[in-house]
Image 1 (cartoon, rainbow, N blue to C red):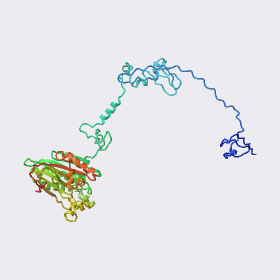
Image 2 (image 1 turned 180 degrees about the vertical axis):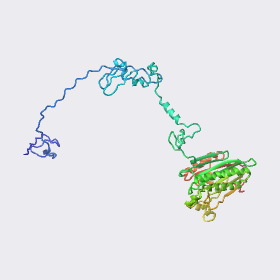
Image 3 (image 1 turned 135 degrees about the vertical axis):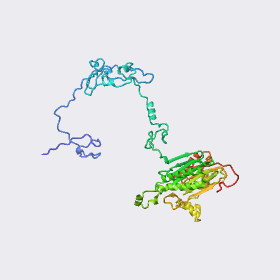
Length: 480
């Protein structure tokens, strides 16, 4: 049998707090359902809920007399540490701390507490075995058997860390921070920067020649190489040599090819020139020696060639250009599209390009099929028609001899540079005015000119200052 409960009378609407009209089931102001108000419970508690009386207040603790810390000394050493056992008190469990006046002080043991052991100041305790700065206690060092230690100076710590990372005299220094030591993996131990590979940027300077080679901004490695040297002719007069090689990127191991060619050509010239070989003939023989060195890179056992019948089509390859200054002559030799420029010291005199490219564009111009502007604007312009390598059609070394009648500068470079200063006039404009006095600085400036222009290729340039006495009017260079 169900039971009904009378709805309690409400003095206010639960929704809008307006007084409702008696007997209404909904609020006339806001429409609140008054029947949804819960009924007042019928039961009453049979046991009184009382609040326990408050615990008597703990008597006020006696004020603790803390020992007065001494002032810091002249070295700014902080005041001594106050240990728990140095003053009277209680631990978290309400037990008294062991102090100088308690029975346990002689044994050095403190009273145990529910929260753990209490460190005391006894001589046998763990606290006594910890080394502190006890300068305030003159006898502390004597009783402990240790010297008093001062707080470490953070500046000294940083200095020690810097000294640990500093490279030893003669060791390789980081190119990024200029202070860290470079480890065996090629990373700086100070700043963590990876170091550039040795061939990414190379520089060399002799008394009369300087060369710079750079990887550029787009290639992942430097495939150029160079060799500069000097020797003496049989009559004792000097001979200066510069060889620049450019690896063919579409061939395998182009970096090895350019390095082998530059080294072989340079060694051949240093051997033949002192014997009295004419510089032009010596240049021809040097190019042949360089070709043989590159060909040797492609040599493999017969068994290996049987598995790759087309291996010879991707043999290592490179181009070569070189210059010799000897006996008042300027000898140039080349195979490929690297170039030699003549820039007179007097910039009002005409400049000249002393080489002709072994390229598709040069062939079109030579055959009269295109003018130079049209040929070099074609996408096939830089396709080379001559190179050093086992897959070259036929080796045709080009050599030429010149006898300049005025001082000037010889620029030997790869297309990574002349692509940004193609004509002789543009190259002369890019060469610094003091290039003959500071050839290394000028070579760096020319590499920077190519990098500023985009650095799409490896960049290599060698500069040879040519010094002669003026012999009157005439062209900048006379072919011998």
